[in-house]
Amino acid sequence: MVQTITYGREQEIPLRHPRENGPSIFNDQKMKLGLFGSNCSGGLCMTDAPTTYEITWDHTRSIAQKADRLGMEAMVPVARWKGFGGNVNFNGTNFETFTWAAGLAECTDQITIFTTTHIPTVHPIVAANMATTIDHISGGRYGMNLVMGWFTPEMHMFNPQQLEHDERYQYGGEWLELVERLWTAEGEFAFDGRYFQAQELESEPKPVQNPRPVLINAGNSSAGTDFSAKYVDINFASLDLEKMPDYTQAIKKKAKDEYRRQISTMTYGLVVCRDTEEEARRDHQRIIDEGDWPGARHLMSIIGVESQSFGEQIEKFQERFIAGWAGQPLVGTPEQVVDGFQRLCDAGMEGMIMGFLDYNEEIDHFGETVMPLMREAGLRS
Image 1 (cartoon, rainbow, N blue to C red):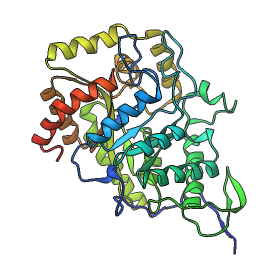
Image 2 (tube, rainbow, N blue to C red):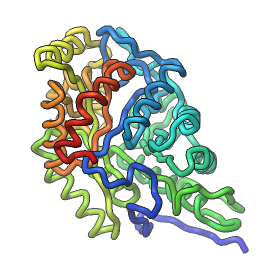
Image 3 (spheres, rainbow, N blue to C red):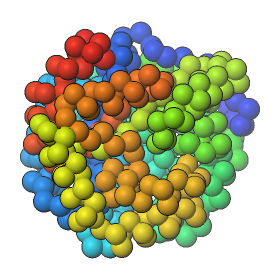
């Protein structure tokens, strides 16, 4: 029998976390850790500052395996189809995230591997099956970072018509509802939505994770936080430290009160950790001084117009776009970096995904100097 499913924005999906036997991202570490952007040229740094970091598979695999051995919880890529121009064409050289995740799932053991999915660029039927495939390759260590497609020049490569900001989240909600139905429905079904209509749908096998892989989103606008509260497991936020407590409390309350769900909050940013504070601040400043300012201005002008997730923070965070994609910077000695993690934890953040100027080299120093101090501080076990 074919069942017709009609979805609307009022749909309540009764998903909770943490799920039994879930991936490492749901463990009990007080401050979860991961890497962000290691699939793209520059990572999180729009700069000409020297680094050995490069987009090759050997280099990529080495970074992921080091993070895995250190016990980090997540590898989150940046989905990019077009660079940002300027002097370095930031992120313009990159590995596509579904195939990237499949490769890393095979060569790691415990870390959760995410894809970052620009929802307008892939049909939900294709996305559902690709995600399930990676979930099987990883043995249930897979997650999906959902992005609505904010970079209009990039989205024009796929479709000349870009939806308005809030409607992108409506489209994304229906897209995800169809994907989740493909992950969970037994037998054939029909789907009758505003954006997608189809008959005799099916998708096998089902994901290893039950009822679905981990979902994350970094929407911080009103529409973005509503989407996160309704659908995903973890919301990522780029905020000043003093704004984090109110933000984390508000989105968790929204998820609970409006959608009967639980949600976690994490942040991201650049880590510049050196043996002395002077060295750390010198290297951080070099990233800025040798930054790609034309590319940064281009990026900020686009986000200022088209992404309400950042809004008025654009001008204030000029340097932070060059050194960390506007995320939370942690700069200093190992002790100072751990103090920074403690402040994030006290502000309600349950984890941080990080970028380094030189991922492959700096992650070794991080593991040797920062991780032991985090255990001493009770942030890691």
